[in-house]
Image (cartoon, rainbow over all chains, first blue to last red; front, side, top):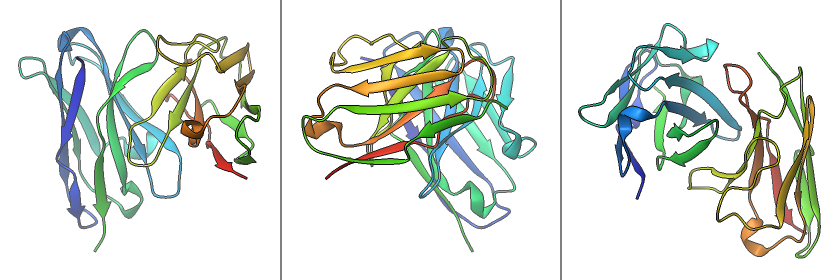
Amino acid sequence: EVQLVQSGGGLVQPGGSLRLSCVASGYIFSSYWIHWVREAPGKGLEWVSRINSDGSSADYVESVKGRFTVSRDNAKNTAYLQMHSLRVEDTAVYYCARIGLAYFDFWGQGNMVIVSS
Amino acid sequence: DIQMTQSPSSLSVSMGDRVTITCQASQDISEHLNWYQHKPGTPPKLLIHDASNLPTGVPSRFSGSGSGTDFTFTITSLQPGDIATYYCQQFEKIPYTFGLGTKVEIK
C-alpha cells in the first residue's frame, strides 16, 4: 500500500525556519517525482514546489523562491521541504504528493504550519 | 503563469441534483487538466485526470469534459459523500495552478 507520512509542522515566528518531511512507503520512491501543495486558511490549494526523481532538479512557485528548498534522500525514502524566512502568509496546511503520469495520485496527511508572533 | 478561472465559487444543492462546475484556462492547456475533491481534514482526492479520465475506483457519476481552454466537471446525481470543495488544476506548465475551488453545500 502506498503511503506518504508527513512530519515537522508547527508554530514558528515570522522570519523563522521549519523543515517538513515526507516519508514514503509501498512503492519505489526513487522512481517518482514529489510535489508540495499548500492550503492557507480560507483559501484554496496552491502548488508550491516539485522535485524530480533523482533530486537533481526542482521548481518553485514565485512567492517562495529563494526561501524554500525542496530536497530528497532516496536511500531514506524521504522528501523534505526546508522553509526559511517564513512569513505570516506562509501559514497553511502543507501536503506532499506523489505524481504519477501527470496527476497527484497519493498524498500525505498534511502538516499545519503556523507563522505568528 | 496560467490562470484557472473556476465557477461558481459555491453551490447549494439537494441530494440527487446534477452539479456542473466550469473551469477556464487563460491559455490553451490541451487536455492537461485534473479535478480533485477536497474535504476538511483530509488530503485532496483525484476524481478526473487528463480532462475526462476516471481513475479506477471513482464512481461513474463523476465525469469531466473539455479541451483547450474550457472544461466542465459534472456530478450526475449528488450523494451525501459528495459534499466537499472541488478544484480544477492544470499541468500544462509550471507552476501547476489550481482554480479557486467550488464549495458544494446542501440546500
